[in-house]
Image (cartoon, rainbow, N blue to C red):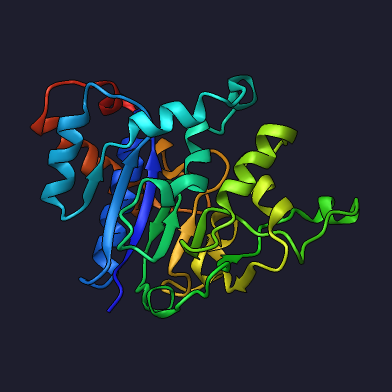
Length: 263
């Protein structure tokens, strides 16, 4: 059987939320699916992060040299807001992940996996195709003409490494920029490569109070605040405490490092 992986891309500041997301993914995926965290920058905490990942059966890959070189061509001023330049790393994942992974499930670090991932794992994406769910588009934006039918969210994507459009999207952003960074670039070059899937696999946190527990498999905490910032409607203390619990656990094991104060 061809092996696949669930992959995360993070920088130093976003490691702890990403680590928690990876632990939750590991809990809900098959033992045959690897969970991998890649790093986009050199970090004094690299060895600690690697040790923490090993304890949770998560593969840690120090890909900082590659990403530092590749991302250096980007205009960093375009990432001065809430989007980290590390977000562009998802576009280049096939270049840093072992070739044994033909099928790659990418997850943002601000998701919580709350249900089995069997559908995503069992779906064999054809060459040149990828899975993604529709993006949340506010009603006011729709009234102003924004499309709500042909624009996907890039927080959860499954793709076949053969024919992945990420490099094309990266080059598009270098040449054209765009307010929505990797997501906007991917949508701009997607052509007929996109296979829409249910928002069960990328559920906007704005609506989590409207569904029963267990209905979404992946909750995506897009925009701010984030669940590690505190308890804010529509989530409860349960969604917040998962970060606090792991943060305390990590701080009890290691000497202070920059990312231990991110929660």
